[in-house]
Length: 444
Image (cartoon, rainbow, N blue to C red):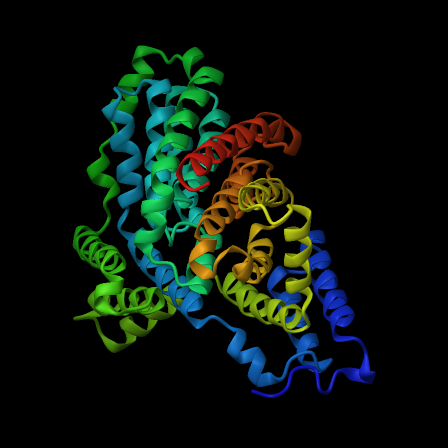
C-alpha cells in the first residue's frame, strides 16, 4: 500500500483537510440540498483528488461484503413483494383479532416488526401501510395511530438482526459479526421493547378505539387469499428466504460471508423466477428487478466508506477515540453508556448511517484500552441499539419514518414533524432506557 498523505495538495495538514471534507460532506447531507448519494460520492472524490487517499486505498476502503448483502437482500425483497404475501399477512392479522381496532393496532405492529427483522424497513412499510389504510378506512377509524405504530415497529424489529437495519449491516460487515451474534445479543431486549411499544400505543390510542359492528363485518369479509397474486412465486420466495436465513445462521460452519449469502440467495431466486420464460420476457423481468434496487443507498454507502477512510487515514478518528476515552476516564461502563445515549439522540436528528460509519473506526481505535477487539463487543451492541432505536425519535430519524409520512400526506392524512416528535421522542427515550438497563445487566 502506498504511504498515506505523501502527496497531500499544497502540503496541507492532512488531519485538518480531511476534517473539513468530512464536515462539508455531512453538512450538505444533513441540509438535504443535494441527494445524499451525490454528495457522498463528491466527498469521496475530494479525498482522492486532495491526496488524502490513493485510488487503491479508496477502493480497498469499500466494504464489498456490506454492498453485496444490501444488493442481494434488495433483489430478494423486490421479487418477493410481487406475490402479495405482505397484504395477505395484514388482512389475516386483522381478521385474527375479529377486526377489533385495538387488536389490529397491536397485530399490525407485530407483523411489521417481524417482517422488518428480515427485510429492510422501508420496503416493509411500503407494503404494509397501503393495506393498513384500506383496513382503517373500512373501519372508519383514524389511521394516524396505526401509521405511527408501524414506524416504531419497523425500526424496533429491524434492530434485532444483521439484515434488519442498515446500521446493523454496516456494523456486521465492518466488525465481522454474524447473523447469530445480532440475534443472540439484541433479540431478547428487542422482544421486550416491542411488547412495551404495543402496550404504550394501546394506552395512548388503542383503548379508546371502537368500530361499528357492520364495519367490522366488512373487514371480516376481506379475502386474504385474493391478496396472493402469484402462489408459485410465493412458494419459491418462501423457500429461498428460508434457505438464506438458515445460511445466515450456519454462516460460520459453512465458511460463508453474509454478502455471499445475500447475493447467492438473490441469484437463486432470480433463476427460479425466470426459468421457462422466453429470453425477451426474462430480460424485461430481470431489468425490472434491477431497477428496483435502491441504487441511491448503494452509492451513498460506497462514497461514505471512502470519506470515512480519508478521515481515518488522517488520524481524526483515533484522536476522537482518545478524547472520548479521556472524557470517560477510560471507564468501560461510562464509555458504553455514552455510546448508547449519544447514538440515540444524534440518530434522531441526523441520518444514522453516516453516524454509525464514523463511530465504527472510532470504537475500533479503543481496542487497546479495553483488552483488544473481543473486549469491545458490548460497545457494538450499544452502538446498534442507540443508532437503530434513536431513529424513532423524530420524523427525520430514519428512512421508514419519512416514507410513511409521505404515503400519509398523499392520502390526505396530516403527518406533522412536531405532532410526531411530541409523542415519539419520549417513547424513544423509554426504549433506550430499557436498553441501558439490559446492557448494564448483561455486559457491564
